[in-house]
Length: 272
Image (cartoon, rainbow, N blue to C red; front, side):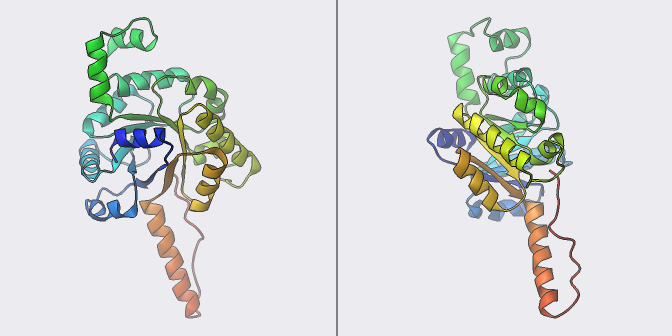
């Protein structure tokens, strides 16, 4: 799908599915479109990808009709604009806690290339852009999506205001950071974590805004969240985690079958 097709699909009540890609190898592109994905999630917050490599990845995946969604290192509108210029169809901004942060990102994603005072006035509703300008913005930016990470107690407290900002396409819960903010580091089985995730997802979907969780564990939990809340974006696991966990399990099974000592440290814990 393109970014616009992802947006249309969600508006029609469908769920879109993607996975984290950290490997820049073009070999992935040859095969990954056969996995049934709608988009790929490329992270530049925790993964050291330079802009040239990122641009190549975005354009290769876009050519395969897999919308590239790029998480930027910080909620910076200039970084958002930069990755869009590099070929991203969507921007995911990390650790959002205020509506004002979202508003500035809306300007970068949906009002591009308007900047400066005129953009600030338009975002605050103080002026209306000329009809010809507005039509051109809608045409040129229709393939672009804005998602934000909700991953802290302050974000939860300001969630109503965050969701009220026009132009926000969806929220993505960051489980690792959220678990720390709740005081349960990486304890995704705690009741408080589970209820907080459900609360965020339900409130977001009730507002008609897309919602998802980037979860590195099994798909069963994503299925349960989707059934309970109407969650309509699946950010499932990632290339590194799936590879490492499958490899670990295969070698563990092999050694146990031969009666050898199995040296395994348990499921991988990869923070992205």
